[in-house]
Length: 88
Length: 249
Image (cartoon, rainbow over the protein chains, first blue to last red):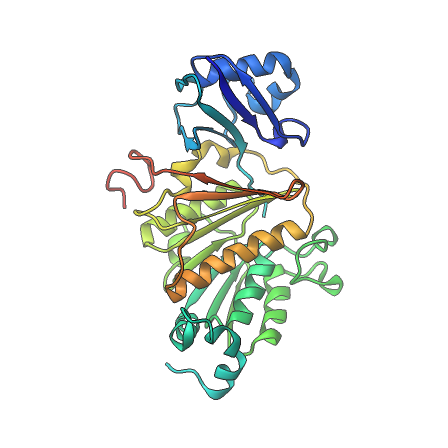
């Protein structure tokens, strides 16, 4: 199981991160990445372990809506974690 | 309504655009656009549309000009610090094009007043800096059947999409309402970023009002100015969207 994950620069000190991880769900993939990049955890999750509201997760360029962490992924999928830019 | 000789001369370079023509210019002249926010995004949008010949433009903002606005909010100048943004902005716009009627509204957009604000409006450009207002406007536009052009920025990054509720994903389809509860933080920004996003929003507005081209619907254009990467991400409607799904509009 290899999922190509792209993490928005906002979550990684201004640098886009691209990694391949194993996992059956979005949540599993993110947890794997966070073990290697623990600084992202506070930016990505709230204190209750929920993904923060201003972060959007896309699988194969499609919004996964409210499924978020439980959304299944399969070998070859791509996953993108983006921040909703609210500034004007 | 017709175009007079002065207007034909003034807008000649856009009238000769084959898909636009005098008919397109008349569409702009008849249009009433609401720009929500007179800051980083609102300033260039208001300038673009005023120069393009929009007939009526309502500018809404509840803030006053601060020194820290002046790296990007091009409608406001040093002499305007402390002045209500809509007054500072409308004064400049009136000098840019005396034929565009500018309506300044120094108010907060709320769920209670949003519906009334949209009466007679043909299109809304979202230039707000907070999620609460964006969701309120998104919902009000969906209920009124008014196109809503979203733009957002931070640093050297920006994103844009055009929402036509009932036909395209609305803001609530794409993002959880929970973002609306997020505390507003000072965000980093260079003036070039809102300038670029606003130009894309204005381009969408002109196309939609004049009825040509393909709108940026069903996809989010995202750019990173630091790397000069532009990406288009497909977005989809949520069947159970609280705003536009399941016959809610």
